[in-house]
Image (cartoon, rainbow, N blue to C red):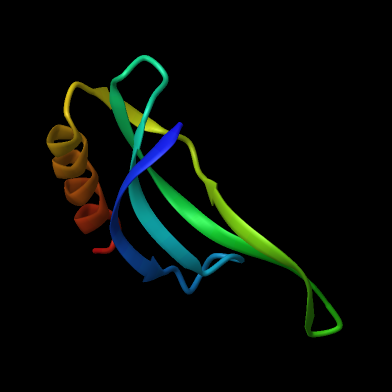
Length: 82
């Protein structure tokens, strides 16, 4: 998967990893998908001991264009934040 576009960044207060972003990814077959990603890092006794990175939740859909994947992702984000 290749990151194509970051659509939005936000926080989910109820989640253990609060920092989130919505992204469009290009699949190895040339099609596109989108996913919510979360930022993680390792902490011990309140100190960061290892920098983390972005990991994605399950992928959503297969689309022919970036624009189609982004439109569907934005619609899902609006509905999930209600």
